[in-house]
Amino acid sequence: MPIEYLKKAKLHARSDASDTQKIVKEILDNIEAGGDQVALEYAKKFDNYDGEILLSPEAIETAIAQVPERLRQDIDFSHANVKKFAEGQLATVADFETEIVPGLIAGQKAIPVNAAGCYIPGGRYSHIASAIMTVTTAKVAGCKNIVACSPPRPGVGIAPAIIYAAHVCGADKILAMGGVQGVAAMTFGLFGLPKANILVGPGNQFVAEAKRMLFGRVGIDMIAGPTDSLILADSSADPMIVAADLVGQAEHGYNSPVWLVTDDRSLAEEVMRLVPQLIDDLPEVNRDNATAAWRDYAEVIVCDDREEMAATSDDYAPEHLTVQAKDLDWWLDRLSCYGSLFLGEETTVAFGDKASGTNHVLPTSGAASYTGGLSVHKYMKIVTWQRATREGAKPVAEATARISRLEGMEGHARTADIRLKKYFPDETFDLTADG
Image (cartoon, rainbow, N blue to C red; front, side):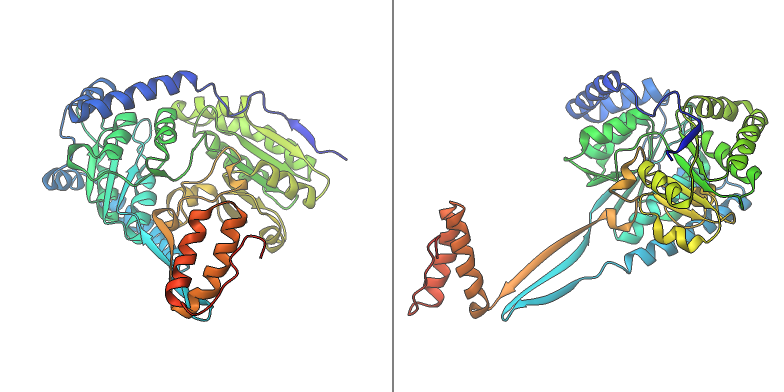
């Protein structure tokens, strides 16, 4: 029996990006050509800010002094958790060497990139957690130059809590600049900054498009779309908690999809009844986003059994995946496509977003079918090396010469020939393509 939609999305999180692409390209081209001064002009235009661009130690200390002690403690708690998890990830990356054939040694080496540019949104919401997630992982990975970039508020500058988070997590420089101009400043090495090797962190459609356009010149964490979340729930789930979790993610933005997949129709119907009530109870600034997201992008799907639920979830490949169902180990073993998995009622996406330790920079728009989220590994290059004795090189050179000639690459073949002739002048080798 096919799955049944009790609620079907009217829209999908895909937008016509042509206007955005045109705007972003023009800004990037102008800043690359004009350097610091043009970037400052865009900062004044878009950020309405003409204050200090690269924060001095004194400015950082002044901002830190404005952060309440309890908030500092919460940021420190989150930082410690993210750092501990990132250190665990780092431990899974090991240099090694192995003898491929007698006399031929090959190896792997993990090298952190030199410079990381961490973009931290600061518009409607001060994304303190994004500072923690991006800067901490770069620091644990071993990046030598970490720039934290965040939009300043007119006449105020970067939110003090973001400054504190970026500073305590290990940012070497803090750049008060938002949007495309901030991304460009990190990429092109403006204001005396090192040119970024990788750009990470969430942002609006202009930031996302700038990262997409610059990909190749620099690395990026991922091409991000609107955040999305899916909940798998069976009859054991609490409909109020399910509804609250859906609403909590819908408030991200008007086009943030939330999905409920269940094998219990009565649960689905109760959640659909509760969600509008919970949205109506939100503050207005949050309510507008959640209302639009639920109305236009949300879906409620009823399946026959848990296997069909799991298959549906894997097909959606959500950024955030929550399981509120019996037999959590079964779900952990069965599910394969998600950015981050939250097992059981006792955890929720907001925990991962803010303080539990796993990273909240995650693949969206189905990208979880082929990639994971931000981690220490994103800041590292896994490179290979080899060395050989002359005897170890011998069989490799013979095979290389013959394969190269079969491919029609005579120059390649001769790099093998010359070594065999030098190392083994008294031997004869059959190095023709047909063997």
